[in-house]
Length: 161
Image (cartoon, rainbow, N blue to C red; front, side, top):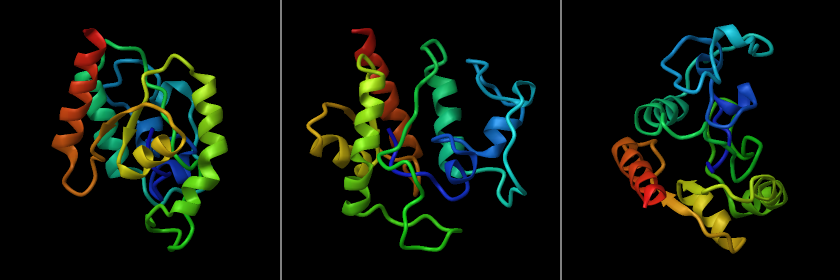
């Protein structure tokens, strides 16, 4: 569970933690869920093909969790946050998290047996305020890639116990 769609990624692709590069280009996808052969098409002209968080998340998951089923990804709020410009990532505000709760509840109901991992403080806050138990990992942006990967490996090790 992420925070919100990034302006270079899910705000364009519509898929949490993805960018047009992840959907449309060849990369080491152990699940076979993405890539040029699957017919994904990004509407309109894409200014940004890659998005740093999406790249770090999928590269990290493919390196550490390829033996697990394809992760289901979602965000605490399903839309790009307001307050900034469309070509930047704004901070997620409490009102944004409140707005996203019904969507988040729907997703949690959709996958009731899923192991939920909150990626970043906003996702963790949204889940906690709803009373939902979740693993917490560092968001990979702003120097957090190593801590994110460490957190994912820690969650995976708890799944095998």
